[in-house]
Image (cartoon, rainbow, N blue to C red; front, side, top):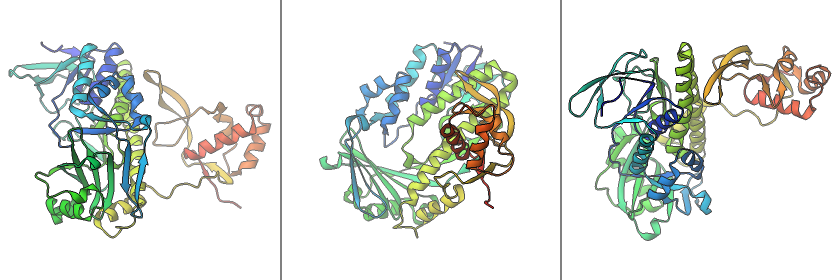
Amino acid sequence: MKPPAEFDCLVVGAGPAGSVLATILRDWGRTVVLVGQDAPERPWREETLSADATGPLKRHGLLASVRAHGFEGLAERRWIWGDGTPQIERLATDERGFRVDRKKLDDDARAIAGSRGVFIVKDAQLEPPLNRELGVAQVLCDAGGQRHALRPRSIAVAAGRDLSARWLPLSLVRQLPETLALTAVFDAEPSEREAVFIEAVPEGWLWWLPRSDGRAALTLFCDLDECREVGEESLFDAARRAAAGPARRTGPPGELHVSNATPRLVTSPSDCLLLGDSASTVDPLTNLGVEKAIRSAEQAAVAIQSLLEMPDLSRAILDRHAHWEHELWMRGARSALHGYLRETRFSDRPFWQQRHAAVAVEFETDEPARLPSVLRLAEGVRRRTALVRRGRVYVEMTGFGLPGTHQVYDELGRVPLAPLMSLLQSPLSTDDILDQAAAHPALRALPRQALQRTLTELWQKGIIVAAPED
C-alpha cells in the first residue's frame, strides 16, 4: 500500500519511542507515517524494567504485552559495591518489575500503532539526509525499488543511539566518559538464575542478567581507552577473574559482543525533533531504557502537536523539547556518577578514575539541605515569556526564570511571585523577607509557613541564591 504524500508527522524509528509517539499523535487526530526496521538480534535479548515502568506501559497498552511475552522480575537483587560486602535485596511482588523480550515488545508497540491508524512502512529506506525544511519532499525507497516523495509537516527521529550525521546535522552537547559494553552469554546453574547481580571490579562493573532460557547474559561496562589498550577479550577475562559473584564461575566466552554504551546528549539545528536514544542515552547504571523511551515519546507528542498548531514557533518548540531531554539526561547522569562515587576500592584504575573525575566536572558539590539565612535574586532572573505545557500543547506564559532555561514561574504553591520578587531586589534575611511579606497587600493573607516553603523551592530551583552575611 502506498504511503500518503502529505501528512502531519513522519516518525523515523519503530522502537518503543517511535511507535508510542506515532500512536499518541494518531489518537490526537493526526495523520502519521512510521518508518522503521526491525532491530538486530542482541545477545541480551531480554531487558529488565523497573516497577516504575508499570504506569507508562499501562498508559499505552503495553502492559498486557509485557505480561503476555515477558516474565516477572526476579525476586532478588544482589550486588557487591562500595566496601566489597555482598548485599541482597529481596523484593515484594509489586517491586520486581519485569523481564521483557525486547523484540516482541517492539513488535507489539508497532502493532498497536497500526491498529490505531498509523501508516506503517517496513522493508523500506528513507534516503538521507532528512530534510531540514518542513514540507520539503522526503524520498522513501520501498522494497521493490519504487521511490515515493513524502511531504510531512513535521519529522520526529527516534532511530536509536546509532543515528549518524549522514541523516541530519548533530551537535554533541554533553557526554560522560566513553564506555563500551562487552557482552557474552553463558549457561547458568539453577542457583545463578535467581537474581540480577551487579558487581564492581577493577575493570569497570559487571551485570549478570538471567534469561528465561536458563542462560545468563554477562556484560562488562568498561572504559573505552583501557579496552583499546588491553584488548576486549583480555579485559573481559580479567574482569571475570576479579569477580566474586557468578561471573567468576564462567569460562572464556564463545563470542563477545561489543557495543557503545557512552552516555551522551545531542541536539540538531535542523527542523527535525530528536527523541529517545537519538536525543540522549543514559548510563546503564540508572537501569532506564523502555521507560525513558516512553516518557520521551509523551513529551515529543506535545512538541509535535504544538509545532503543527503553531508553526511560527517551531524553533522555540524544538528547543523546548531539547531542553526537556537535557534535564532528563542530567538527572540520569547525576544518579549514575554518584553511584560510581560510592565505589572507592578501585579509584586508581582507569574506569573509576575517569568517572570519579567526571563528578567534579559535571556536578559541583550538592547544595546544603537548609535554606540559607540571607537570600538574593540570582543573576539574570527577570520576568520573561517561555513555553510551558498545558494539556496536549505548549503555550506561552510570562513568569520569572533563569536565563538560558525554558522554565518560568508565575506562582508557586499558590504564592504569587511578582510581589515576593519585589522584596528580593537586595539581600535580605529569611526572617526579614517573611516579615515584609506579612505587611505586603498581596501576600499578607498567606500563612508564613507557605511563604517559607515557596522561598525554599525558589532556592532549590536556583532562582534565589545565598547572599553574603554582614
